[in-house]
Length: 523
Image (tube, rainbow, N blue to C red; front, side):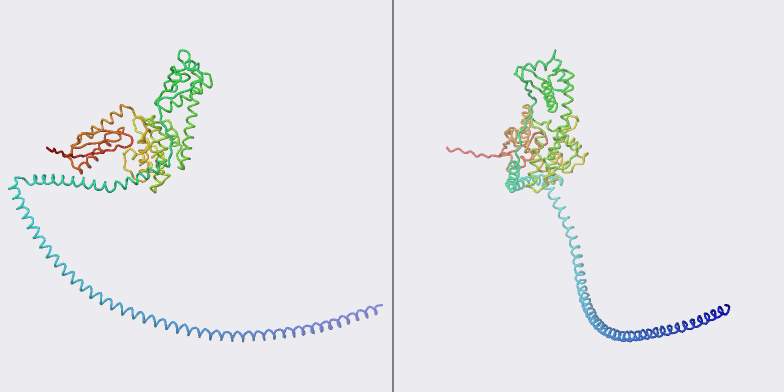
């Protein structure tokens, strides 16, 4: 048994050694094969590298030759350009040298001429000084001779001469004034008529005249007694609250509300109408209805101002100005409603600005706000509507053209723009048209008398008549005292005095008439 085991182990050992030797030989064989393959691949790679190196060497040689060729071409072109530039510079240097020599010669000639002129001027100055001395000597001699023969001193002679010169200049000024007026009168008149005609024909405004009373219609005369109340308590309460006078007479179904303030009168009329509709006419109810009407009127005033600005297309406007615009409906001047007047002026100014190439929107804005101070005159005692309007417009940041229009439409400032001129013209046109305004008879008579007195106070005037409702004054002058040129100056003097001393709406035409008559008798 032991022998078998030893034999088996020996056989196994021998088998393992033989297997190891065989496997080692196989590994060596494989390694040799792999080494041969690697050497073959290395040879192929080396061969390819040699080929690439040779091709790169050839390419580098070609590029080097091409670079040398281009370098030679560029160098030759640069040498040629440099040669051309050098030739051009040489030519310019030659031309400049010739120009410098020529200018030097010209400067030398001019220096010689200037020196000669300087010598001539010095000789002329010396001669002029001598002549001045001689002139002063002769003048003194002439003055001495004149003073001795005319028995006048130098100052008296000057005064006499100045008086003659002043009279001659006055006559010449009158002649030139007539000539200029005759040359431009027709052209300006034609252009003005065209612009005014276009504006008035394109604007159709409503006629609006305000009076001092309003009529309230009642369904029955029995309501008069209820309005009067027991012992007149109701009517006294109405008058006290509204600030108007209530007149109840024998006119059927009608009572009269009288007040110079349109705003208070309108509120009173609306209050009475609501009281009549309500039926409860008593002092407490009167105050309640009156306060309600006042609140509604304030809202309607702002709303009406907004609608007017929107209709005119004026853009944004401060709410305070909107409220003042709406309040103009309850202001009047000489019976003409202030809001109707401002709307008329705004439309006419816009139309005229369009004809004259001005800013239409700005002209309308200035026309709408030119009398805005009239909405404040009842609250601000002691200031005129012009100053009030300028104050509120400046405070609210209005355009300078608007400020200029407020001042200029009453002559307190010069017109500075086309838009302002349109507003002033439209204001005169709206106020002066027939029927636009009414005035008290006493004021009218006083104005007419003042106009005639101003005309009669002038030298050479024989008669003066105010005609056409005081819108024209005809002055008849003495033909022996004034000539035609002086008559032209006289008309301007009278017009200026009337503008300074008389308050009037619109404009006044001054016509000076000079007539000479020659009478002969045949016997």
